[in-house]
Length: 480
Image (cartoon, rainbow, N blue to C red; front, top):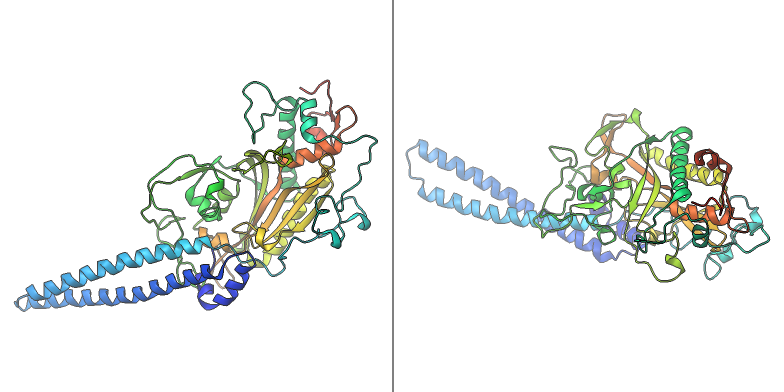
């Protein structure tokens, strides 16, 4: 979440930055109003606490002097009642303020474009002349501009046709339905091979430590990563419970964070109607972001890099057209994700490292690809800057996003209370970097469409052959 101290000190700057993301200035004003009212009532609360202490002292003195205390006790009860009412008001104001703070997304970095920008560099394998011209960065030519030419003497099929020809998925019996895929035979092996390939690349060449989390994420972990409350409607709830929506305690310290006493990840609770406490994890990020919640790391231990592969779940609006065919809009899919805890001065280098790792995977898989900066209005709730990675699908004749690497600055760390000790021994919030490197469905689509031969056979990239047991192609005759 944002630094409350920054919002208090520079509201105009915060409004201008969030305005680039489409956040109305009234949202900041509403938060500031709640904060001001809370601060004012805190002063009243402290005054009442002081009066209560004085009343207790006066009663004790009167008893020692054998004087009557009835009137003093009556006034003390009155003060206690006033104090209870003010404390309830303060709790309500702080709860509403903290929820409003959670609702505000991260501030976009200054180099993030306001509109969709041209790719940052030519698509892999193309000359500069083949890259996306700036004049074609938007409009009808957006999905095909800068595309590599199809080099074979037959029209390419779309991946959904190839999957059927090669019998890579089950389409009969009790099929899982739109948005889900039941891989079979070499289709299932292809998914496993890609996961193993990505994990080996990220761990062996780029130094990420493999971790594997559960398929279910808690409300607390999703709040820490920034997925909640913003994206609750896009996730699958597993259960319901009657507790308050958890949120970190935003304090008045130098970082706008006051560490909570007790267990790591301590959250303030407010009474609320029943709501989901467990969700199918929308990605590995909620687990990764909370790995060091409540800890103070040593600066020498940073950066700490992790990679996690596994299923991701999300609701997709979908449609009846091409946009929902094949592997384009799935409710469950496999992905390999990178995540790094680092010092603020290491964040830019770590984002470059993550992007380089994802691009190396696509280079080894011989898939035409490009990178581009995501515009401010399209950033995820926690991201300050995102590099999107796209691959070219020859059959669909379209660039498909397969990965997104982001820097989250200290936004997630403030929620999870993850800090490090700087050179002066002071605890400071870490910065975090992460994202998909890469998600499998659209990568598989590009692999199938780019490697196809006439008749439906698909040649596999050399880097994947060892992971496929030495098989260099998917053939029609051996599709199952």
